[in-house]
Amino acid sequence: MLKAIIVDDEQHCIDRLTDLLEYNGHEVEIMACCKTISEAKKQISMLQPDVLFLDVQLGNVTGFDLLAQIDRLDFELIFTTSYDRYALKAFKFSALDYLLKPIDRMDLMEALKKVRDNRNLKETAKKIDVLFHNFKDGADPSKRVAIPTMDGFTMVDTGDVIRLQSDGNYTHIHTNGNKKITASRTLKYFEEMLESNNFFRVHKSHLINLSFVDNYAKGKGGYITLTDGTKIEVAVRRKEELIKRLAPNS
Image 1 (cartoon, one colour):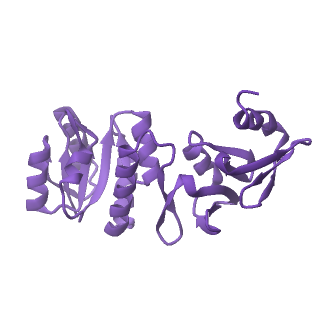
Image 2 (image 1 turned 180 degrees about the horizontal axis):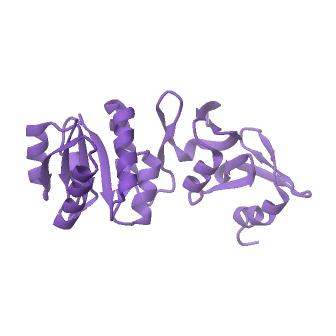
């Protein structure tokens, strides 16, 4: 049985989540429901939950303000949020779970399954650090990202990533210093995550950081050379868009 605390400033959202947890028999005991940061901080200290359902926006403050006041993160986190493109992107970078309001029953079941199967408070603390970094430095094009690997997660600055190469259901991520990280996600996963952070898919198997392009050689599709010396063929259908991205004013 997981001990849970719900933190949300809207009663109808608390009622929705409570009903889903109780009706579907998820073996979750709701220890407390809190509407303010001060109340939540007190209840967390007293009740020591296994999992915290935390609303991103709590009136004029955020759930992150609560986390910043907690000295020891010894519980799992599931965020709840209304649609916000920027917030959802930040969650994806951090690999933290979130539930989009109004909460869907199947999404809730999946989030709880992850909590039970992958409880690792050390990894959760690292993901929170990534989330804080990206929200604090929202205007910075370089982000911290939690890379899922076979052993857990590796935290990387996107500004240090030179290229990503597909290997079936895995992706090899090459960074400055000739470091390679093998991620347990497809290249498509990273393309969707990084498309607005100066990354471009030049070929079905290669996603590159445009900041590391050394030169482009013309041809049918041509090829690019990166600053680490890697030469990568450019797909014919990607050529025109790549040139626009490299020389937008030409």
